[in-house]
Amino acid sequence: MTRTSPTSMTPLEQLRAGRTMRRLTQLAVGLTLYGVSMGMMLRSGLGLDPWDVFHYGIAQHLPVSFGTVVIIVGVAVLLLWIPLRQWPGLGTIANVIVIGVATDGTLALLSAPGAMVARVALLLGGIVLNGLAGALYIGSQFGPGPRDGLMTGLVRRSGGSIRVVRTSIELTVLIVGWLMGGVVGLGTILYAVLIGPVVQVFLPIFTVPLGTHGSGVQRQHEGEHSAGAGPAQGGGGDGEGPARAGDVVDEQDGAVEPLQR
Image 1 (cartoon, helix red, strand yellow):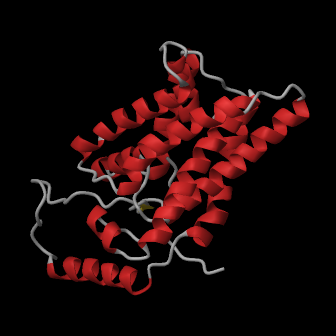
Image 2: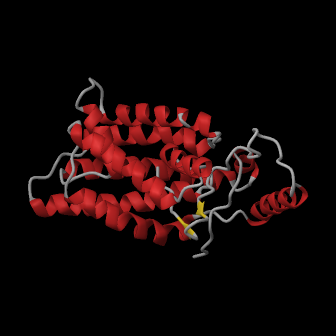
């Protein structure tokens, strides 16, 4: 299969990049499977990823479903994009709604297994499916999820390292979620260890190549940067324009972090 990498684009460029039906289908499938994977990990009862520990902890104190909490938190995080001058893409908005609905649907249909072997299998299957689903919706190139947009926005505004910012955010939500009753366990550790490699395997495969559309977008950005060298352009007083969704290069560490939700 052809392997490619996501292109850094503004929301408008994402809509104009071509291969729209393929990308929309992949986006919908990826977000739905992401919700299914969350339901699988939750039903395993062996621990959740940091953000879902946070969601579960909140759900213990509100008369709403787990999926509804996922949606509420997604909206709240998206509001934090405003002072960070992040622009949400179509995938970002869909992420807020579809994952929560798919998670509740999975929890309604899937019962918690009794045998430990079945619980471990459900957990591992959920982690692998989570990585595949993340690669599918990120690879559709319609923008990152709200939580990763928060991360990249903080990196861009603070000038800090993606590793430091992401670790700080996830440790914070993990600790707060655990204190509120979130489930921390084997699954939390396995998710932290496995999710990066799984996404790294699937993302180049499922990133939709944009062909001449992607090349045109890239040439446009290169032309803008060449013509704009010198005084600050547009945006605010710091000379920075709105961040492009999907721009995740860690300039300090020389690495590219895979986006999640």
